[in-house]
Every structure is written in C-alpha cells, then in structure tokens.
Length: 323
Length: 125
Image 1: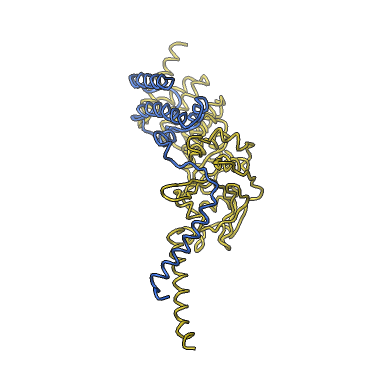
Image 2: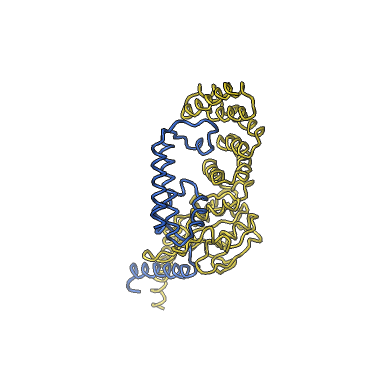
C-alpha cells in the first residue's frame, strides 16, 4: 500500500517525462510535422492518395532513375527506369545528382519544379494530384547515404505519409520520421508536371525560371505551352508574356509572336524588350515602317536593353537601304 | 591525351571569345534575359558558362560517362545548374540507397533520447 502510494506520483512523472521528451525530440527533429498537424495549410484535406502511381522497384543504387520513372509516367510520359539511368545515373558516384534529375524531367518534356522547403507545400502538391520526388539523407555524418523516393499520399489523422521507396511499393512512414530524413537532406523536393499544368504551390518567379530552363534547353514547344498555362495563373507575368512571343517566334508562328509582343507592350508600356522584340518580329513579317517605329520607341525607353534596341534599329535601317 | 587536347581547344575557344569586342546584338531579347537583366555582365558570364560546361563535361566523363553521354547531359543543364555542378560533382548528394536502414535508426534514436532524459532527471529509477 505504502509502496503503491509512493510509486504513483513517480510513475506519473516518468510518464510526463516520456511524453515531454518524445514531444521535445519531435519538435527538434521534425518541427514542420508538428506545424502541419496543429495548423494544416488552407485547402489541405485530412488525407489523400493519388491513385495509380506506377511503381518501379529500384535495382542497385538506381533510386534516382526509379523515382523519376514513377513521377514521369504518372505525369503522362512513357519512359523506363533503364532509359532514365542513361540520363541521370552517374557510375562514379553510384547515384544520381539533383540537378540531373531536374534536367532529365525536362528532357522528357516536363516542367521540373523544385518545391519550397515546406512539408505543407509537399502535402498540398500531393493533395492537388502531383506525386513528389523527395531526397532523403540517411546514414551518419561520416557516411552519408542519399535516397530518392516518391511521395503520393498522406493521412494526417494517423500521421503517415505514403511513398514508393526503393524496393517497397506503397509504404507508410510516420510523417515525423520522414521529415527527419528529408530535413537532413535540406528539405529538397521536386515535381515533374506536364507543361499545361502549373503546380499548386508554384510561385511566379520560381515557375518562370523552371519554364525558362525548358525553353533554354531546346524544348521550345513544351515551353510555349507552359508560358500559356502561366498566363492563366498569372495574367500579368512579364516572363510569360515575353516567353509566349519568343517561343512562337522560334516555332515560326510570327503572327502569334506579333500578337504576344503587342499584348506585352500594352500591359507593360515601359518594357523596352517587348518593343524591341515586336520590332524584330514586324521586320521578319516585312512590315518595315512599323518595325522601325517600334524599335525607335524601344531605344527611347532606355534602360538595360537600350544598346540591344539600338542594334535592332540599326539592323532595320540597314535592311531598308539594301533591299 | 585526348582530354588534354580537348581542354586546350576549349581554353583557346574561350579566350578567343573573350577577345571579341562585345557589341550589342540586334534581334530578339531572350526570355531568360528579361528575368535577370544584367547586360553588363552577360558577356562575361557567357565566357564563364562556356568554360564551366567544358569542365563539367570532363568531370562527368571522369565519373564514368562516355564523351557522347556527358555532352548530352551537359546540354540538358541550364547555366545555373552547370555553375552549381562545376568542381563539386564528387561531393554533391547523389541519391542511391534503398532507404530502409535509416528508418530503424531513427526509431532507436528516439527511444535512446527518451531513455537518457528519463535517466538524467530520475536517476533513482
């Protein structure tokens, strides 16, 4: 009796200490899990899972190609892990580098977008139907082991995230455990989306950079589609307006290019680059007088592109003199 | 030997580029230039990017890729990505493992942390 009496508060304290330390450890090791659980981001369902995300079991060291294959096939591309290994796997490192994962997604016609380092954003993307490739860091400081997996579902009620990982199809992991490894890898996560769809959590400047990368690496047609999709989400995006004109010009659709640059000059009457590109397009369409007027206006606006506009104007004048 | 020749050619090309008078070009202004307009540094950056691409291609080959594959893979990268890789290919994260061992590890860690805290504050128990 005495014993029980003495033990009771002690047991209670131990229980408290256990709870506190677990909570403390969790806050330290997985702070965003606590945040998402206590205050879920607006629009996030309590649970969700993207149906039919294809699973490819990784072979030795090939989690990069496998994860990428799952994301790309889910986005509508038809590509095998073996084909992707040639695009991302680095024999000397026995692994795949992050920027090559992005580059390979673009090579297969998708927009590669790196998410903000936020667990809430990651879950919002899954919520919107986009599987997320995550990088995780396992192993100790002296022997870091890096791992790619594909997250495609979650259940906030049970606190789980659902992933295809390594050789495990549809594996459930506690969110806090996942966050611990994901955090150790710098909270890096990417999505590969078809060019006609803008990721749910995308911001204009970061998505613009992702589409510019697509344009610069030669996927002009896909970039054109992506700029058009951008304008639906951000009708005032200068990058998207100019990008639509530039890609149309590159694809030989001068009428569309002219329309796009005209629209840009209306929305941005001080954008010298838009008047310059309109001038070049008009010249290409044989409208010399209008081209000259537009180039002159571009020069008069000054700014960082003044010299370029002057060069365009000179070229236009030269072409008139030597017909 | 082949690598030395390639390096020599890329250096020679880069220096010949650097020697050119950088006059402004007529024509379309690229979408990427609008996003980050810095025309004063743009030409210098072009030379640097050219050099870095050659370097990264060499490094990829040193990691076991064929010359052809390395070239294709460098072409798929943006200038920023090339800068990110240059000189760091052997130290940047390279995803590879199956990711099973770690989950067990963290569970052990959580239990250990709890145990230590309990022992620390309640040594008599």
